[in-house]
Amino acid sequence: MENSISDLPQPTDPATDNAAAQVIEETLLKVSGTPSNAEQNALLNRVVDAWRRRHGQGSPKPILTLVGGYAGSGKTEFSRFLSDITGWAFLDKDSLTRAMVERLLISLGGDPHDRHTDLYLREVRPLEYRCLMETAFDNLKVGTSAILSAPFIAELADPDWVSRLTNRCAAKGIDVAVVWVRCDPESMREYIEFRGAPRDTWKLGNWDKYVSSLNTETSPSTAHITVDNRLGAAISLADQTRETLKRILT
Image 1 (spheres, helix red, strand yellow):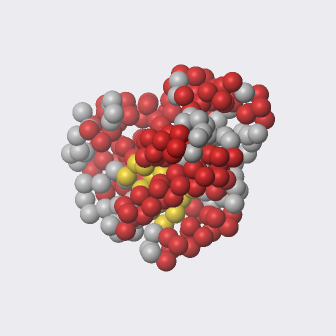
Image 2 (cartoon, one colour; image 1 turned 90 degrees about the horizontal axis):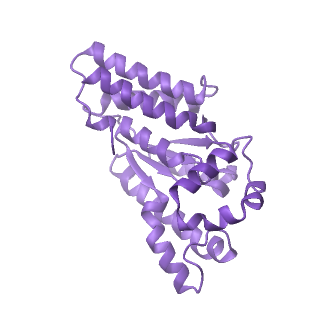
Image 3 (cartoon, rainbow, N blue to C red; image 1 turned 180 degrees about the vertical axis):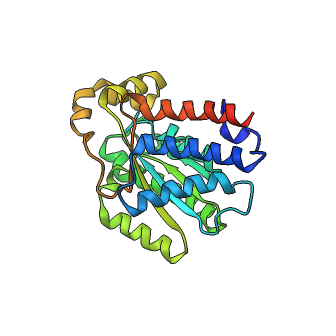
């Protein structure tokens, strides 16, 4: 990753460390607003704490962070930013499962780039998310916190699903944080067109129909924190933060 925070030198004194941590905290507050609930405040504190601890003993209790959002919302970039700060494992659904998904769809007689038909939603999507979650728990079981980047549309719309996950994690001494990356349709389309992924062909060809099925005005009720990436604001701030830390630490 270009301009990676993790590649910067370690802070050489407490003042430098505090200055870097303050930059990170200010960025998170800008993209998510003043914490409005305990979960949001806990996640912000954990991210800053992870920055301080990443060269020390680390936090004794791992955390599972779900970063959801619609296609093109910026969830992958924001997840990378969190991972860059904290050192937590970054697990992206497409990177982990795309090759398997495409081959499975072909074997079922479908389009390898299908992400909207009943065939994909019924036969393939559940396996994608199972692979993602099991990979996360492989990390969590050995004490490595994990950030999962995936739409999580159906999952975060279901409070019972989030409760089951939270309870499962609590039983194993794992914290859970749910992040929703909010974005406007125009910015999402711009990003989708820019990345040029075959899996987005249907969306772009049926844009009005696709957008009409989205709720871009509110976050799922299960979200602990909303990152406002309308007009690409959050990702721009993430890039600015990397540059600021580079000036502080080099």
